[in-house]
Amino acid sequence: MKVLVTGFEPFNREKINPSYEVVKALPSKIENAEIVKKKIPVVYGDSIETVIEGIKTVSPNIVIMLGQAGGRSCITVERVAINVNDSTAPDNLKNVLKGEPVVKGGPVGYFSTLPIYRIVKGLTRAKIPADISNTAGTFVCNSLFYGVMHYIFENELDIMAGFIHVPYLPIQTLKKPHLPSMSFEEITKGVKKAIMVSVKEYRLKYV
Ligand code: PCA
Image (cartoon, rainbow, N blue to C red; front, side, top):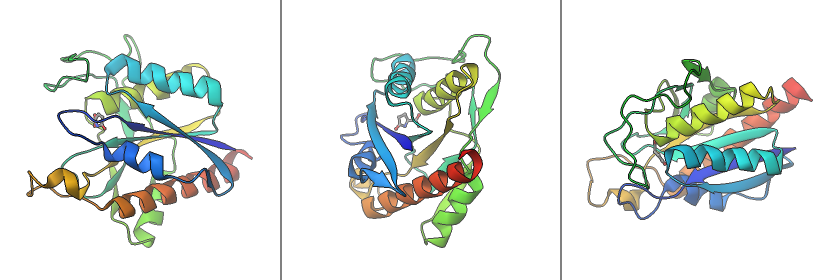
């Protein structure tokens, strides 16, 4: 059993991205499933291509994509990806997209196939603040989430997949102290737990 876990490179003048910092710290096995890690560029199309390439080479059973949601106060498990790219912020190749589809002619949205309620319950039980989020935004994270779900759906792959946003690390909020953050240890523990819950659910459902 294999889990592909992805995190993003830094963007928007940040020096680090907590999503990839956490990915790097994950053990190579969780619940006896192999953890394969990948760093993703914060670029609209390239991010999707990078994960698809990962899916092709790794053949994972589960894909968990992580991203930074600066300003959120807890770990948020995304429910849905929508077919919209729209942001005033440029991606890392300076692309600014305004109201364009991620996939031309694609469906409006895709739901996460991760056990989102169980993950939130598992984290809360472990005393790690977590919630379901009903929007992954309309920037690169949502775009990646949509693009990967579309690929899985179109190719009828038996892959459980979804997206989880993590808050800033304390070090990132030194110059914006009004914004919330969560410690590296707590985020890492939370992501590990989310993977554990997903692996258990996958075994129940598919194996
Ligand atoms: N967060 C951004 C893109 C990369 C990341 O880590 C987002 O939420 O869209």
